[in-house]
View (cartoon, helix red, strand yellow):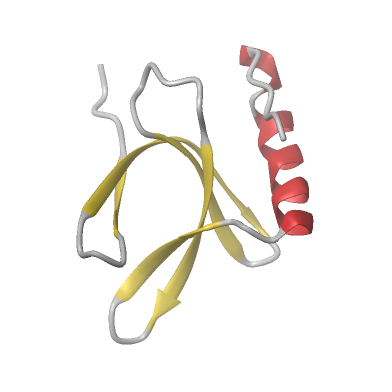
Length: 88
C-alpha cells in the first residue's frame, strides 16, 4: 500500500496540524486539496496552496463562500465514482 500524502499546517499558536490528502486539483491557476484529519474521518476540509517567496508553499483553508462552492463541486465530480459527496 502506498504511503498516504500529508500536509502539515502551523496555526497561530505555533502548533502543527496534519491532514491526509484525499484528492487534489488545479483550478484557475490555484492548487486545491481535499483533506481530512484521519483516513477514517467523515469530515473533510478544502485547502488552497499559496506560494510565498520567503516560506515556499503555504496552505490556507478555503473560506470564501463562492470559491468554496465552486471547488467543492469540482471535487464532487472528481470523486463521484467512489461515492463521496461534499456537504455544505
